[in-house]
Length: 532
Image (cartoon, rainbow, N blue to C red; front, top):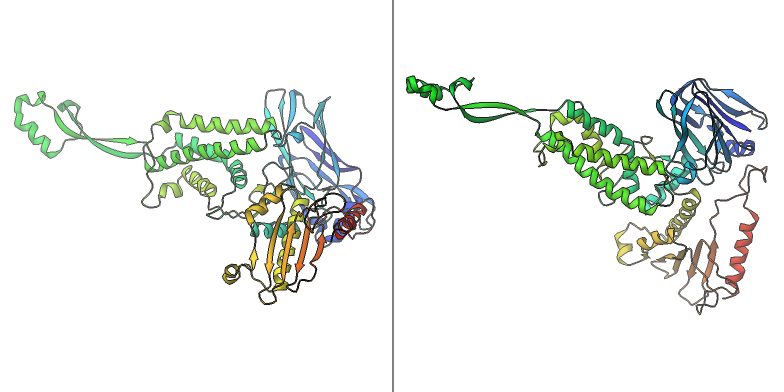
């Protein structure tokens, strides 16, 4: 089934999949008021025409419909769903030199496309990755012109309102564990309103913003080299009369006093020069030095973390940034500028003059106290199934607090240790399956103790009362309630499942659990219940 056709002079992009009718119907039932205008598609190339698959009101009839030409198409229905595998075809209508390549930071995406007989072909599975997918590729035409184009596509989930629900999940997790949701190397990206506190700095966010502003930043640095702000600088020299243009009254009197011998003496005079060593230029050099070091530290750490997953193109791009920093700082212009010593007051040049105001703006964006309006930047997020699992745990935490009438922000609650948790350990348990985590709640008047566990293991053969009689069991969420009168501890098991029945397995628009996930809950209960 063809879902998208993008036409322009140099190439045609076709995207196909098996079937999206079931996914569309489920998505349409979830957001009926905005399903037909949910997405925006954009291109860096002026398109002749964009055609999208439209599904009729009967939920069965489909047809490719034109949305016209241009560079951006707002208010369109989704055709890419995170539950489907899509096949991309880029057919070139012009003669090329060499082999075109896909530009994506993930190695698996950059290397999954083949070029054969004038066509780029590849398949992408968007499972658990709703968001914006940037399909970017580069090619060289027969006349030697290098071109990089991209098509921005929105991938949505039929299981939730991707924009609203995913935003709520992100906000709740970030409220508890700041910036945990972000990931550097992702298939798709999300539009975010980003706020960094003075205490916390996310390398992933910083690098995401850096990649969006670095090219215009370098351009502004080079512009300043050609259109620099100069400062008049005066100094005093001694010279013979014929070399002096401006005389001071005192030196003129000396010249007259010497009479016939006046031409043999040197006289003090003032010389005005224009220097590039201004406070504004010293500020620009300061930003270059600081950003070069910051970029090296951040990218070095991320490159080590993702060394097996980064594509060659992503590494080449980062190396180009490093070379640009080095070339600018080694240029004669910036080597002639001294050390930045700060401003006593705001500079009108930095605020208003071309080049300088851009440097100042990007510098403010990349400082730790960063705030961007929603939609200005794309930042990757961890896979949605993991975020959903953590979100379920945090919802449980809030429910327990509400039932026990405990306010986590109340200083008295903290002083009496009515809520005990170790947040740094919780971050470890999110990323390491062998690390469990729990929060302990105490009812202030009844003495009831509640323990909320994340990834709590019940081991086989353990001497603990809580163990498994069969094999290792690790439910996602466990709630233990212990009363002070020595009654048996009540244990409640919860398993967060983002996975539901495939769209093709169920005609119901309501999410239905997969059978083996229900069986897993019975297995947890029976194995753990038998040990008590």
